[in-house]
Image (tube, rainbow, N blue to C red; front, side, top):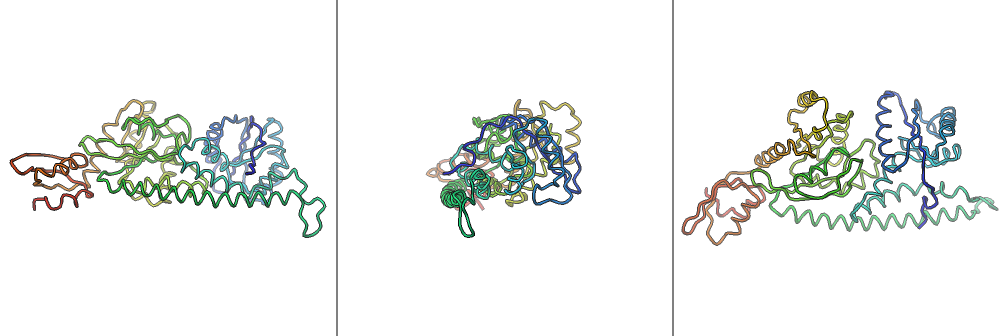
Length: 425
């Protein structure tokens, strides 16, 4: 299939452009540009300059006015940039207009995130999701790839040049690919839902780790479960959800899932594409909302995560705010400030393990609130139920007599149907 990027050379010098509409301060725009710079650096593209454009009314041709467009062109020339990156989504026609004006590669935040996701996806589902999002992104931009052809050569009204015919062929091919990817992704999601149903049938509760990208979610999973999920100091280090078992201090077994990180201005297509990944949070009994306590944009990151959770309908779940990386926190007074805002917060270092025991006790307490205290009289022939109770519930006492096993336990709801006939009323 035709690939827009097949002839691209390595980008070596990028200029970032932020937009400042009415009601947004320049400081806020620069916060977004700081994040875009981190994203671009994840693609190994050096940033040599940045500029903020006032946007009172979006213009059709360049998004900004022609005067500002000329100023940005001159900035790119002075800095010898070979790539212009917008923090806002620009339309395919605006993208073409900018490339004609500047003579260099022009992309937006959406394409940067797509490139990062493409390089990080590991599972088949994640790769399908990314391929689908990229195909939908590329479809209206095919004309950009064919500007070197004479699309109207020899053409009267109703006639088509070779370039236009090729564009239509490529659009048809991409359309077919989108339908094929959607079909494959649907099949993978059915398979994942089957796996989830099997997990839900198991009498084991679930918790999901959510939060802003690079907050340390994977490191927490690794520390608690002994997993070996990639945990790197960069945005979107891991995209694929990983579920591992953990035994809490009250001996309660829990399945813990690490989910994809969130980010401000996440492209809508990617929100849709990754709903299957984020659905791991939907089936969770509660959430660990992880934040990097050292981030200068901590509260904005917290709210961004909440907004994405609202989109998938899980913001009302029980949630533990977890503030990570306290081992490198210089201003300790920040803990007091955060506690006043989030009284239920837990402060940890996933690197050193500090506070992890407190977090696990809080997790056990949440599950304990969902348990029902009961007394059981089990026959010796039902050691399978004894094993089930030890594996999934909090067994408080156990006494063996001739024909009966007397057990007192705090039991999770999913086990009740199995032991109903042996409960002492």
